[in-house]
Image (cartoon, helix red, strand yellow):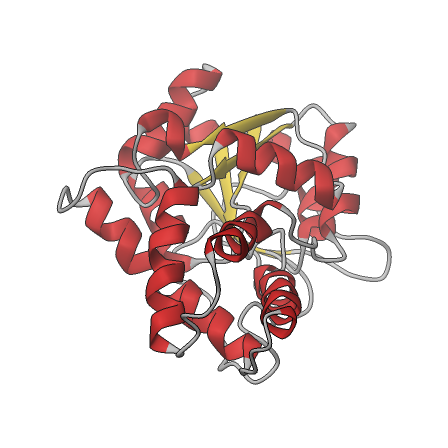
Length: 262
């Protein structure tokens, strides 16, 4: 995809769109969880004398994430912090891959791998540009406050505010999470822009009255993953965080490119 595309019909820039706050999903949108977690799995597994397809183990672990979240959101099970939820799904994953030999200390270290993930190359530069603009930036993550604070510091991602679904004792895509963010920041939902690479996150945010921006991350699930179609109905589709910063601060992209506005 080249260029940015606005689906709102209201114009291009953050000021024209009336955006006061940009909220960012973290896992996948800003950070490369697959590479980061697979690296820690490989190191710990090799040290324990185990051999496995570590990226595949990582994928299995991540695929258990969304069903576990939805069981909480629907009230099927009580809320627990994301670290605890990751531990439950890790134990299930290790059992499924025959890796039960990993002990307690190794399992706790694997859960903490989600606190130290690498950022995508564009993320820090785009956030830094937004930091020097009137647009407030904040996380809106399913990670706990402590987890996201450590993660963003480790990855070099600067935010004005760290918000977490933990403070609502729920998880995205619960609409209460998005409405709570607007209330806490004292901003009308329509002046918040939810930025994510996950269509279900954006759909839920739109349902709560937020504006939405889709950033594709074709490598989130690795180089062999099937392409994820751009979601319908989002306000903005943009290449990366740097291009989003240009859109919100300048109303378009850099020299030699152009923004398509419907």
